[in-house]
Length: 212
Ligand code: GLN
View 1 (cartoon, rainbow, N blue to C red):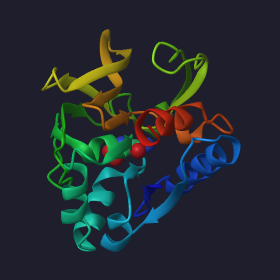
View 2: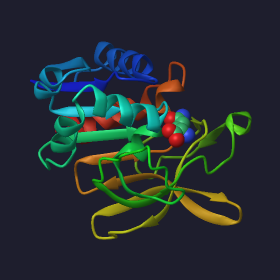
View 3: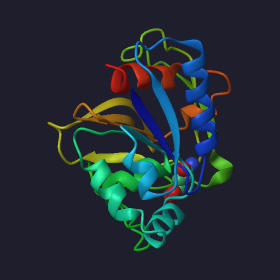
View 4: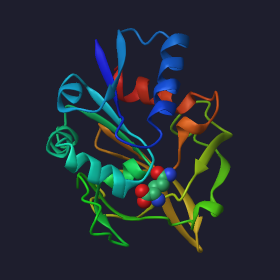
């Protein structure tokens, strides 16, 4: 049995949970998989994988510190036996370095990249773009990727561990918006959980990182 936790301190955790539930209802992954909402160290201790959702990385980091969850999260994401997927604010929270540093975001420091927050501009500049992920997710072309005050990976600090999966041009320069680190960490600067009933990204996450 494998337990996928969804960090529920702040942000789009319900949408991730709903996408995961839908995947489990529609597919057989060959093993029993449970979904757990994570708010406390006890919740986290039961998980094999953790999704850190989008939202607001400053608030997420502050809540984690104030509730005492931060040290357990730190230990979890630095454990190579655990699987982690960070979306948007989750990507920021995992990263080692912030380009436009905010002293309030105490990151978990595991993802060996330099991240620029709000790289596409303000809320009003949010957009959904059809992306072709079929070179790493079979059949996943035309996927509606939603970017909301999204961060980008400006620099990969450890090119042996971190592999870029997808890039987009920002101000004439290609920047990374999806990446993996080793075999156990996935990050996306967009929100696959907001792709209405399209669960292809979550299904791939379960197959690639959790059930095998
Ligand atoms: N810009 C936000 C931050 O810095 C992230 C936005 C998001 O998660 N959609 O936390």
